[in-house]
Image 1 (cartoon, rainbow, N blue to C red):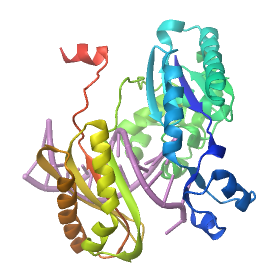
Image 2 (image 1 turned 90 degrees about the horizontal axis):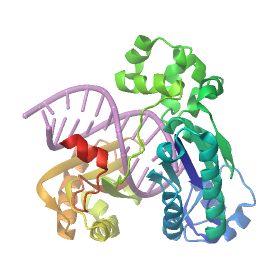
Image 3 (image 1 turned 180 degrees about the horizontal axis):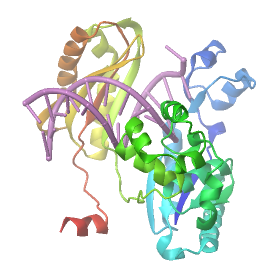
Image 4 (image 1 turned 135 degrees about the horizontal axis):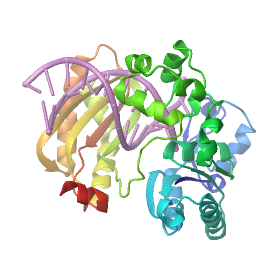
Length: 336
DNA sequence: ACAAGCGACGC
DNA sequence: CCAGCTTCGCTTGT
């Protein structure tokens, strides 16, 4: 079975990394300690602040290690989120899985003084949903026999991968709950949402997605985006404000010992639509001048192509290669 | 099979 | 208009 672990956060000891426009109106800016920000906000709604990532990364790594030690396989999917597989060690015994989950909670509490939410189910989509329902700091198990009944009354938006657009499409088909989805006409779904996604939805509605817990998935791209001081479509101005971004990307590549094959200029226009120009190089590189020069040229192209100014601009490097490939045994066997 | 561009989703 | 970052799928073109 699959377990989804979500760690709690050390918000009070971090600093604000991003603050939305409402927060800025209230005198909250990035770099400010979270505790100070909270005082200024005194509980104002519609205000979003986020903790600076770097402050949490070390904690996150230690937490993930605690979890990994107790799992058959693990796939980290975010700074505070990870899936583990306990199929082998627990052999379908959900009480054994529950004990492991409690052990994980205790270890994280003891070692880091943090809480976490844990969900247990027969697939990723169920484990994830359970952990969402367990927040904050709880533990929820969906046993296989009762999974379908448990899911049926919930709105489709609770399923991972179902956002506003999909909700609207499903609503148009008269599908509101996961139970509706389970009894939907597959052909109708396929017509509106495509074969692959429909198949996922049908399976997920019964709590049976076949997504494996994959070991050793690393990043496949890095990007840096900045909000411009003023709207423009001028490439020199874009690159000037992306100077630090170029250095940042170079640093990430160096730190992870990776090179990129594809680089993109990204522009978010004043209407919030996104436009990109990219090129794939002959061979992977990771030097700073390759980033700078290619991005510069791509921004000239992009600036000439758009009919509105940029609000935000960014550079993305993808097609990352380098770092030793650590593949799972099953993948290794599959290739033979 | 790969390249490019776009869109949806989620943290 | 929640900022910034990431992943994945679809479509079109070569």
